[in-house]
Length: 247
Image (cartoon, rainbow, N blue to C red; front, top):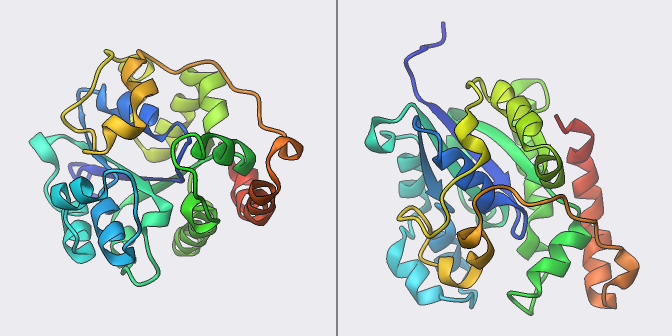
């Protein structure tokens, strides 16, 4: 029997340059929800040695032990809230990080076409690889969760949320087993205490926002530089693994 008093722990799995931070704003505006911004970022940077913007600050502010991060994801929900929304970047879950903790959360997957991700990503960080945008790891995590559930977990396309926030968030809330809340559709502008220390580099647009913006035209692969087009081509099969399961 399911314990109806247990908190709902939502792991939203996304790659970068999607609407993942706006989605976090949406859930944080619910009075029943606590959020956690990219919990494994410090552990990812410490393990890889990658030179990301604000690397030292990210490592100093976070926990570099992935096991400790996983334990916190399953531990007490901040402020005694009944919903714990965790914004996870799929590429942060390195192959050496144990994934068993995922069985204790409700996973959902936020997707965006790789061409559009890449066109946005290189505006903030010039160097990019297939693994940087997380598509392969997202598909691997999706398959792991689907195998455990015996069915596809919820998948939501960022542009579907922008086109119809109420409808998309209503479907997502139902799939997650929580009621839709009107507060999810708008929020006050500005930075949050819950934002990662990396916010000054990445979050300018969302800090100015008070709700979801308009739907965006997808980027045509033919308009990308050749190196980015090759990455988009490699990422597409992973995107197409999840896309048919959009809710």
